[in-house]
Structures are given as C-alpha cells and as structure tokens.
Length: 289
Length: 317
Image 1: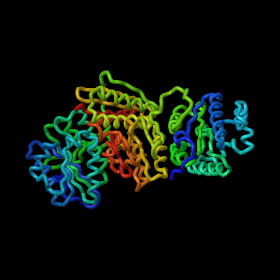
Image 2 (image 1 turned 180 degrees about the vertical axis):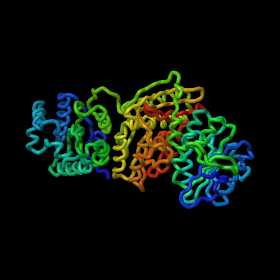
Image 3 (image 1 turned 180 degrees about the horizontal axis):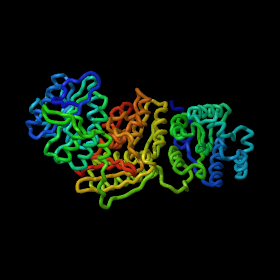
Image 4 (image 1 turned 90 degrees about the vertical axis):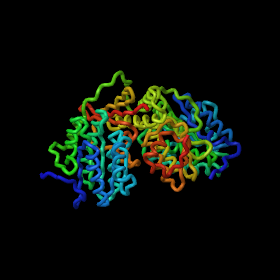
C-alpha cells in the first residue's frame, strides 16, 4: 500500500540518493547540505556513522555554521552508528533494516518532526560482515518498500576510497538519484540494475554474463521479495543475458507464483533460451521487443 | 564369445544395451537392415525413433508407412547437423520410453560429412556406449559402405556388434570409449589471421562485444547472431569458471563458416557433460555446454595436454 509522503516532499525517486565522494571535503559538502536542509524543513535528521568518528560529524557541522549541538539537544539531530542500525545483531538483514526505517519514521513523527531524514555510511559493505552481500538487494527493494511508503529522505554515503569502483558503480546505480561524480578510473560494470520509478519492479540494462552474476542474483532476490502483487522487469536496455542469469530470474519469479513477473522488452537471447527451456517461463509473462 | 547372427528383437531381463553398426551398400540392404529392425520392434510394441538423413528417411517412410503408429521420424541432417547434440536427443527419447525398451536408429555419418564432423560424430558414437552402459535400449547405426574406409574402420571401434542384415558379429576392435575420444582429440588446423583476445572474468563483456561485432561485420545473419552470442558467452564463461580463470578467444572465418575458439587450462573430466538435456535451474548440469551444442552447426572439442579447446562453428547462410 502506498502511503502519501508528507505534503511538499519530493518524489520517492528523489528521496533516496547515493552520495559519492573521494575526499573529506566532498564528504563534508554532502553532509552539511543534507543536514542543513533537513533541519530547516523541520525534519529529524539521523547520521549512521561507520568509518567516521561521531565527534567528527558534529565538529564538521559546527565548523560549517550548522548549530548541530542545539539540534541534538532538542532531539532533531541524532548521531548513531551503522553497528546500531544496519548491523544490529552483528549482521545485515534487509528485512530488519526495512522494519527499522518504519519504526524510526513513526518515532520521528510521534516526536513532532515533519519527516525523517537520514545519512547512512555504507563503508561496512566491503567488510566481511554476515549479510553484507545482500546490500544491493536491499538498495533495490527500499525504493518501493520504504520510500514509496514512508516520509523518509535518505542519502547513502559511498566513499570511493573504501568501496571498489565496480561495486560502487553497481550500488550507486541502484539509486534513482545520485550526487557526486565518480573519480575512479575503470570501465562501467557490464550490467546495471535500478528500481523502476513509475511502478514496482526493476530495470536491468547492459550485458549479463558470468561476471555480473552477483548483480543478477541480487536483482532476482529483490524481485522475489517484492511485496507488491504486480512486478515488472524491464529488459528493454539489456543486450544479452546468459542461461544462469535467466535461471536466477526464473527461479525468483516462480517463488512469486501464482502472480507472474511481467518481463518487458525481452532481448532475443531470452526468447531463444525459453525455446530450449520452456520451464523457465512458468513464472514469467514475457513481452518481446 | 560366439558370433551373433541376429539382433535380439526383445530384450532379456535386466538392463540390456545393444549398439550394432549396420553396413549397407544398396537401398535393398537398407530397407532389409533398418526396415526389419523397425518392424521387429513394432511387433514387440516398442517405442521406435528413426533418426537418419532425409533421403533415407523418405525411403523408410515409403516402405514402412509414414504414419506408422509408434515411430518417431527425425531428419538427422537437421537434428544431428552438430553431432554433439544427437546423444541428448537419443537419451531424451529413451527417457520418454520409460520402462519400455526403446529401439533407435541413428545414422550420424553420411557421405559428404566433413572430416571435422565425422570426428565429432565418431566421438558421439563412442559416448553412446558410455551413456547407455546401464540402460535398456537398442541403437542401430547404419553406415553407408561408400564412406571412406577409415570412417568404416572407426565404426568397428564404436560398436560392440557389427555386420549386415542377418549376419551380425561381435566387433574385434578395442571398444574403450575413453580411448576413442582420446584418438578424436587430434591436432586442429591452425586458422589464418584470426582475431585474438585473451580474457579473464573482468573481460568477459568485452569478449562478448568483440565476438558480436566481428560476426556482424563478417555477415552473420541477424537471426543467428543471438545464437552466436549465447554460444560464445557460455564458452568464454566456462573458461573462467572451469579453465583456470582465463582463456583465449580466437575468431576467424572460412569460405562459409564463422568459427569462435576458446582455449584454457581446463580438463574435461566428464566426457558426457552437455550430452543430455540439463535441468536449467542447476548450475552443475552442463547447461552451458548443452546450449553450445544446440546453438551451433558444429562444436569441436579437444582435451590436450595444454588444456581444453572448444571450436564453435556457425554457417553463413
């Protein structure tokens, strides 16, 4: 069920941002702009620190003219840690995190705040933490399961000095809004995946081979877990997928039966493979190009 | 071992597998040898698959009746164009037959087959003995005596029983299928001026793009480019997964065929991989190799000391 966000709020697509930075100054720019806007709009602002020492967050805001200390005293600004939020229990669980957002938004509203605004440092994603491999699945799911439903604005902080280029590009691509340019060299990942902005579902683009299997697995997990009955998988910008990618998608779709995943713009490779393996189509409703 | 003069028309108790080669010269030989085999099977109410080249298919249909119940007719020139996909078809038919001992006619080699096709068809014949070793089935393989002598000699090594209508005998040759397959791993002719691309996992997308654009420039019909890309994709990813993490892709054309070759440091430990329709949901079932066989006009494989080689052929039509 879609719950209207607070009046005057931006669309869900604009409220889930990947903020990319590669220097402390860029980090501070993102931090200050985001926190200042939240405080000015009467929103509660939370910062989930991971690599950054919480005191550094406060000092940076103060140095840049944001009265963070007053905001903390009146409960409008909270600095906590990724360990207490994303990683409760020592592991990352997308379902638990989605529930945490619901509770946090309710709590902010009950304290009279207009909405909730949060910054999450995502550097933990590259550490050996149980469930960290589900981060992409989570980023893909929350557009529909969190931002379309809750008055939340969030900025996921991705530090290019910590997150490798390939992983960062894929994760940032799962956000419909991105700020900060990537400075790292390297080719773009062969596959990109993002939530659809106009309906529940995902868009896979590029060329999905063995090298992009983890991206496709995450996309399939997001499809399987989507709570909406109608889900669309837009493949109109996908040039190729291999049989392993199709099997992942097909298996995810089968977990949703009797509802079927509507596949839009299926590439010729998909149609050809269904000729050989028609059982892969059982959870799919395929529309070709 | 005593000479067998007739093929068993009804199986004994337990799993029994018969794989005779029938050498024929005339249409009359063919109709007697193959026709009698089919008629005997039908008398026993056995499921029958006849997979032979189209002109032989017409001959048999005219003789036996094209609408004869219980017979599945297949043009081997089409279904078996790539010899590497025939065994999958035979096993699927045997699977569908349940506990009714199936009778199959498979003629994978005919006059006009290229040397490369004959080699892979010989490998297929040897692998039949492995795949059906503990199954109930009788598979008759007709060989035209107009085929080169060396081809007919190979049939002695791939069939436990050889002969002609009414006069079959055990083959005196060494029948070890592994040995036959090793002998099929001959030196491949070197291409002239191929496009060469070394690849590891992070280069796979570039390898696919290179193969796609090259095939398009070489004139591969749009309808076949999808098959080409799917096959190259599976071959290159297999090199990364099973061939030591990297490989070399070479692309070249002959007068009428595009060829993509992957070389890596892998070994083919299971000779039957890709020779049976896999469970598409299982990553361990050889679905990539099976797809290559379905998609290509010829797949050549070589297990060499240096590693594993796959050549994917696609005809320009």
